[in-house]
Image 1 (cartoon, rainbow, N blue to C red):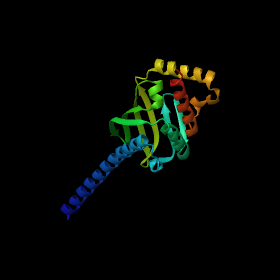
Image 2: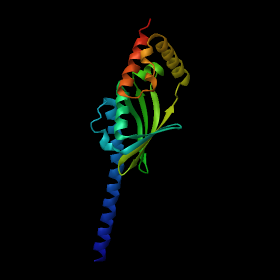
Image 3: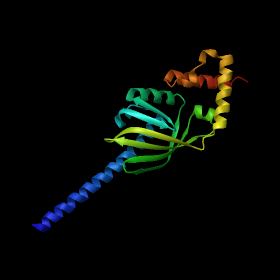
Image 4: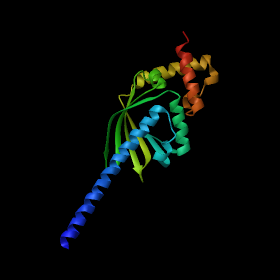
Length: 187
């Protein structure tokens, strides 16, 4: 009888250990699918992965989004035809850490090379609740030079587009992209 209890106890512990490992793999898989979705700009399933609200953190800038607000932000991002590549990914204590390369038309123009970012993705009840971003090797001088040149030229030549840089909606993204194209073709 004692051997049976010990065997059942060991089997239960083994089963629970396997189940916990599966959850860790699932969070990494969720993050991989999240970046694949961002890369393809197909947001049909993205709200399944998020809690009712999501917080993004970039340095000292912290923004809380509802699911619909975050989807609106992603539609802005999709205007620039982004390409996300996972360079590294891992999980520790339920937190997924990923090193990402991101390139799109806006980044190409302003930064002239891909963003390399470290992201910390936190979960609650198997849903993403926050994404913290740290930029690696951000070239602020290039970014500022290109941004200021663009803004000055647009202000002088296409004032109807002013404000695009702060409008993170799909229509704001379309204006941003139009401003970049007009500026590049000015010569």
